[in-house]
Length: 314
Length: 275
Image (cartoon, rainbow over all chains, first blue to last red; front, side, top):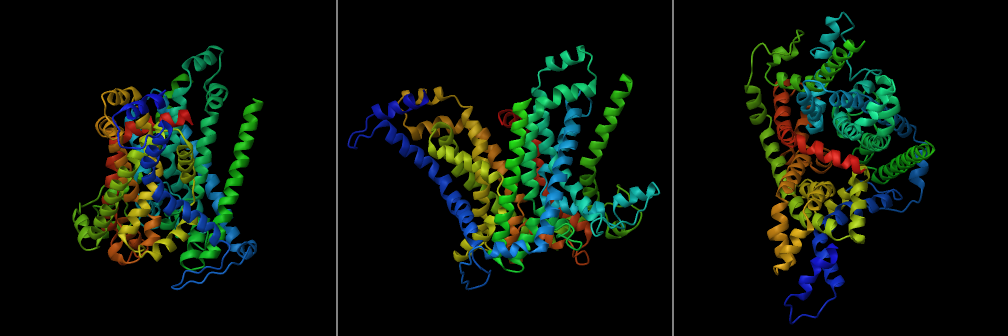
């Protein structure tokens, strides 16, 4: 209905001296003129680089002054298969992305349920819940480095007050570095998850929950049999998005640990970054990027496929 | 049993508040502590003396002022570009349903899940051939490009809310498309434009990765990069001023999120329900 009416006046208006155009044509020209400014930068600085990036993966390109690239076929990918460091980093990336995503979901769900219950201090919590989202990743990392600081940090001070071991160098210790970094990841990602889940909770018809409690279902049962099934689609989409975001994350861990100690927090994005800009092998790094994208897309497709299958079954 | 539920809920809520709020509180407290207190073994949230001069030291001696100016220039310029470009774009995306707007929406989604690492390599090469690496102009263009998809999506929601009838009425009165846009649509879009502009400003102000790769000379560093350079070099820079600089760097985004708190929640609500 929009289409016909908006275009009519233009067509009927006084437009002498110009070749008459059909309505469809003039609409197309208008649309193109309006969209072109958005399309141009995206094509040049986003679509083109992506295509070139994939092409780079099949060359021996290096980041030098006068580069000469040669097409090397799948050689980069063959070398990658034998690169143990890359796959270790990939494994760390999976542990990081999966645990951060799951913990975000659990913590976000808890907070969303509390925010949906009729409690005091709601607005304070809502504002606090958004702060991690708002802060620059670099500042978040600096802040948590202070929290984890081995000798003057509040975390160790609290442990000491409880008589627990209080000389832990959280970010430099081989066994604590990755968990410590994961906690920060959860802190940063909680807001979006919480708000999305809260939105979902508010969509659930109150009658459904009341009906369940009349049937004698307790809080736990109501959650499992009414709330959780209603939230299923939202949970699926927010965990998928969180997983991708977490897997692609760079800045936070780069500032927290730079991948250390001994590569224990070397996320794949950090590994690829170092290969490209420290070792200057951009062809090889591009191949790593391609592999990461392919694997993540495959995993995600699998996850969404199993989700939609079990949706149909239930 | 019933009686225990409420207290347990409050206990959990307080735990969340501590977890979410304490780190920021600690950063603020560190920003006014002396170096001696920060390195001492007695740890307390309230500083024993208030050292406001940390802020002055951070700005003057550590070169943060220069970096903050760079950040502001890049953020303002890319915000202006994003608004200018996305205003007509978002309108067209909503009002003309065609192949381009379908592809556009698809790209918006893809770009949200995109690993920047794959893009940055060729982007670096492209910008280098045009002499735009290590330049604020280059960084502005990159920030514009990568904020654009979300800005388009955000503004499109606001366009959708404007009744088409209004435009038709304008058109009946003989106004051409440009006049309808300028005199009817754009004024109504102002709240959306303000929200989009604030979002673009904050994304650019906070952005780290592209700035890290593209900028090489310290004179061009944006605030996040300068702050990062201080990390690890704890001998060179005192912790107090570093915390002070971090607090300053976080202010724009916290202001934005406080203003937008309700809107963001509602916007996400709409998105979540549709998605």
